[in-house]
Image 1 (spheres, rainbow, N blue to C red):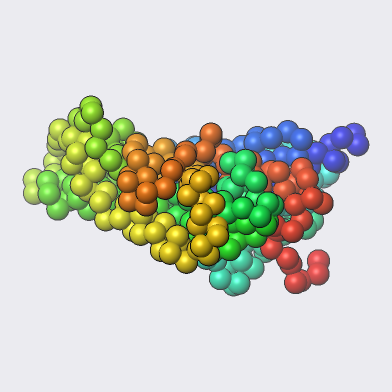
Image 2: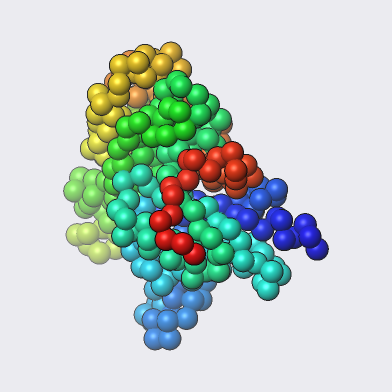
Length: 342
């Protein structure tokens, strides 16, 4: 019994694309898409997570599959709260016990109003206390960087809604930049390109699959090709098209350029001592975008710095926030302080 009380503190990586829940002493117990399917007439939640994601672009009238977070922040408050509550219940079967302390990750460029919305969603979903940690900080802790030492660590976290670039030293963020160009923008760029070049309309799920199978940021020896299905904008009928990795790379050029630019301008604002450290230690890439083939190579080429991809880039933010929960007292300083007593 006592154990279930101790084990209930949790960390939530509330992402635009996926939400991960880490429970104290048990690790990451849940990793599902941040999607909610809602019945429009009653406002009732029909499905959450994987099940709801399968419905995107396929729902009849009266049901909408929505992504309650956009660009790393809450776009639909009620849906976010419902989703959080659902995920907490999924992890905590014994509902009556669960009033957890909760650490939630937010993008570093978030406004105080957006931050308050995230906290409020946590309280509404049943938390006893809500703490906030900035995503790049959590990503750095999760990737195993020595954030408390007096050396510069640079982390580039390419998520679904935002790309976070930060230089961290002595347990704090020295310079950071959060841009709203990330995985979703890459998908949108593929949709726009296919429309413009081939008059072919793709759904967002298809675009994401194209990005995962063919997408790259740097030329490789083997450039695979694949068939892509969509709707022909001229005839209105379904059509299949052969697309090469080189062409997809061209489609991704603009958002990739924005990501590289963010890394450059953050390096530009980094104090020289820390820039020297980063030259030695390199840049760590995390987030789903770190899985894009050749992104490390591209950054290496453009910045001249060594670049390493974190061990499990998809879960580093959740793991880092989880460390904050496990070592609550030790890592208290990295949490954003709450001025509102509750």
